[in-house]
Image (cartoon, rainbow, N blue to C red; front, top):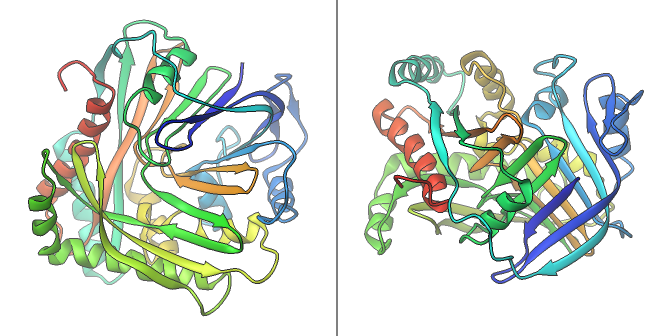
Length: 384
């Protein structure tokens, strides 16, 4: 069984089923997820294939691409992945339908904490990043950690998806199940949206807890030099990324606008560029992936620093999921995202935030914890 679901609008979910083709790509081969057999098709072959895919192309059947964070490391020449590191998934579906989210059979998700980062290991990594900042190697680094949970029983992935989309999920929420793995993303952030020869990106930086009224938290965030500089640096980075597609016409439409998600307040920018020629998916990903908001600035140097400081594989977290559907070309940044091993009952959820010279370790650690709490609160986990 393989399926994907995407939030479509306030009332509907887009469900994709019955895959025509489905592949997961590794460095030297791909696995056919329909037949279960490996095939001689390398990640370099896949990248060449992306160069033949235009964002302007009409598609007969919906396509879903999942790009792991490690794909960006390989793409940018920073790190050669191991043979068994997944880099990308490509699925073409036969059937699609828009539907009102189903009434879930589950009444709660029985998760219990398995493992979380300690304050001491976070502080050690934070101090290493501060040294890089003081030495002038970078301006901002997005430091993240995994949180591992387990369920008390093996859950049906369809039940998980029904339960998830019955909640108040974010604009770029999606779920995909294949084999024994499931991606569950409540992302509020997009890498890009493409429509009618316009491409937009929406970086998010800055996080604050909020109650029912968010305006007080917003006033405090607007006063913060740290929150302002954090978003301005990434906005400038992404404007330059867009100008690599069509120089020099990228425009900032919104700067430091508020964004509300369950229990949290963020600030974001909106940047747009008009595309006058055929734009390949490869060129788009070369320019934009991974998203600057989940790396830092300057992007390539920071990705190298992250590889040095973080001691785990981010996996699909901080990667991107792209939907080709009719005229829609929408790519999320996979924050607020869990990767679930269904049979082993393990949920790995990534969280983190941007570190600058103005950051304080205890505040950044609390912000990371608040992002985990927001996810658990959305899913009505016991105790939240």
